[in-house]
Image 1: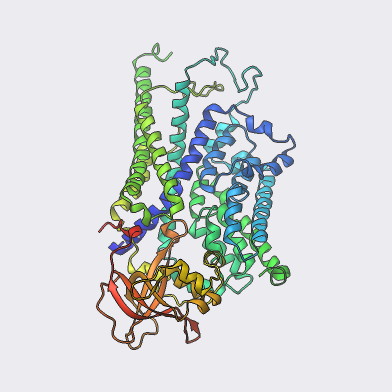
Image 2: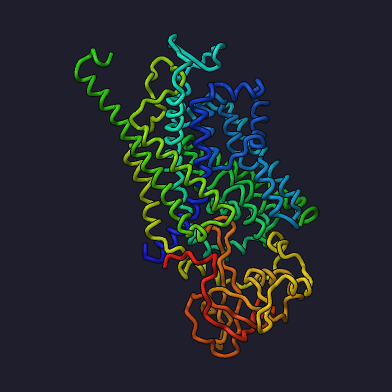
Length: 323
Length: 290
């Protein structure tokens, strides 16, 4: 790497890192305190007993607990460990970065003059449907086919025995003492948060490094990208690929999408739905929870579904209903 | 039980405890390095080259949060934590929710080396090659950019004169961004076209459609969130003769008549320059390393 390339890489790398690190910290602090203070099964109690209904509700939890895609991964790691059904956890993971008030507001603001309500509503609805679809499929798959072995093993080996007196689970220790000093639990929570931060931070670092390498060399493809803008089949695929490489935050990616003036409305929608679900850094973050094979299948399925939707929309409605 | 089993068990327990403390120290150091880098860039003001204004305070909060997390865990590394719940058969009762697959040293290296090297390598700006990739020499095009255009929604000439300062020699002071985005808005072109304006930016060679060598390019970088998504905001400077000697990629103040001609089928923002002088780096850009 020559001096110019090092300079470019370092600038882009630090820019993305500074932008994302606070959100990862927020997510890992939440996850650390969930780990220590949230009794197992609590989330489960808030959801309907019917597993399909539970998945449907999970897709809306981002409206109450808005978390961006960087922060959501450590949170769901802990929630799964706490007994939240995996289908619900993945639904929340995919939907929360899109179906939340902050993302809705930024999308609406960015698309002023370009049917902002349609774009905001379309983004949230399509994001919700895909997340729920993935969640419903995952509820029918064995844990060990979805989760990393160590996480799946820890869940499958953990008996959740409800104990009505203190609200959290016990197994074999009758000498449980709820009056242990609080600071030792705080220490445990902070350690858990730090451990999660390092876990996620390693994958985030690798993802950001790759993103920075693409980012500083991506523009040679800009002319090629422009040539695809008017093609109703190629444009959504091209913008999803761009979203994958750029790895933008869901709270701010609409401002980029809105300036892609040459591209069709449905291609921009594809950019805005696919990006928060799958990008370079997320691929690495997801590996801290999910099996690589599952990530690959999920990525291809989501890509294919959004592409089919975008092409169909453009063919049937695009030129009539929206600019 | 461990202590009744003989020296071997004692050693294993001691070793495990030492490993746990060492792991916490390594993790804390990694977190503290991230905190130090973020806080240093914020405190030095260099953060303005990396993050858009909305994200700078968030970065500060993140840096402070990381510092608290790392210091807390470093100072309590030797203490025993209590996760507050009991465990299943076969599960360690003295566990600390810190088990992980990767070795602590490998984690420390992966967390710190890329950040450390990047902090050492960065010059707070992109090279000319990357600037070119980020649109410095792209042809300007008539396009709708609703979000940005809405920030400067169709003012009248009177409104512009009331909202922009005038120099002693009669030029209205514009930001380069206003002039650039006027290229994508016919209404703004009608109002600004022909105006006597003054603006500032960095000057570089004009590489497109410049057969007589009378043109230069003026640009600034515009970022939405962070520097990785930034793009160059350029206009063309037409001197009508050989341009004056100005520092390449240096800051200049230029004044002249704003025009929006269509050349070879492409709409362009061209400032017919009357005067051009080297300028101080503007306040928000003063945090360069060199």
